[in-house]
Image 1 (tube, rainbow, N blue to C red):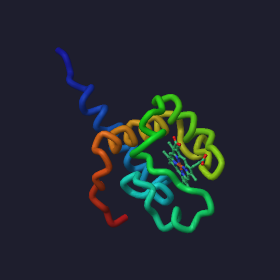
Image 2 (image 1 turned 60 degrees about the vertical axis):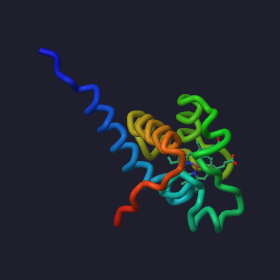
Image 3 (image 1 turned 90 degrees about the vertical axis):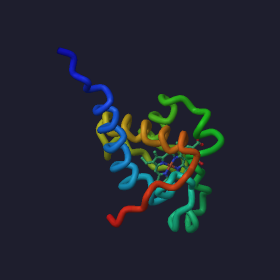
Image 4 (image 1 turned 45 degrees about the vertical axis):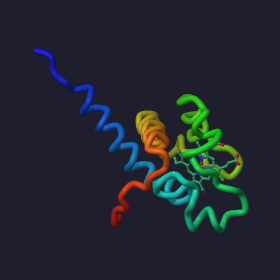
Length: 109
Ligand code: HEC
């Protein structure tokens, strides 16, 4: 009998991605990925929105490489997250981009 595991797996992946994003990315890129955060406002480099421009045009692999190895003011995260979690973050960023920047519910973490 076929088990419908695909949908729930992708749901789990996004939940995992959201969790990791809030821990590692939101501090600079904002909880909604818009690039608005207290940290960004106080950093010498511009922290880009993940919902516009280059971040949208890049392929999944480019995003994955970027968050794995970093670039300029963007830290590397290969030390912090296993491959699966970094893939989950890429999936979550794609989801934020599809939502077109409407802020996800703030959670009191
Ligand atoms: C310390 C602040 C900081 C954190 C934390 C951070 N970033 Fe960044 N991010 C930056 C800055 C600054 C840049 C611009 C880098 C540059 O100018 O080359 C950037 C660039 C990027 C880009 C490239 C956008 C483009 O030009 O295509 C992506 C994608 C990105 N970050 C995703 C993430 C993700 C996903 C996380 C969490 C795993 C994360 N960032 C965590 C500061 C941060």
